[in-house]
Length: 74
Image: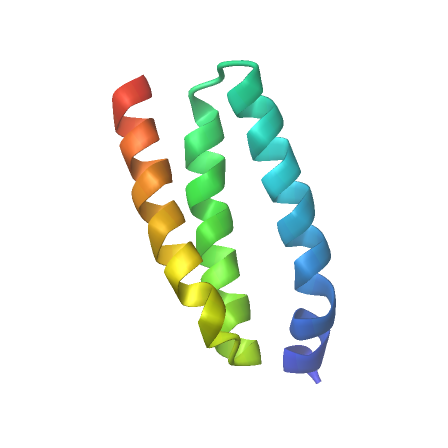
């Protein structure tokens, strides 16, 4: 079932993208924040599929932070 595969394997992709976006930010690359925004969309998918509602505040806060940083850096 596709839902089970997403629930099981998406966290690995999410981790990799998070690490990559932080490396980009550390290298002062403007695209870091765009990568982070895409990652938050994937996190939101995972949160809804797994019913991990406790992660929603973090997700919403990071949407704000990544959007703010993207605007400030551009």
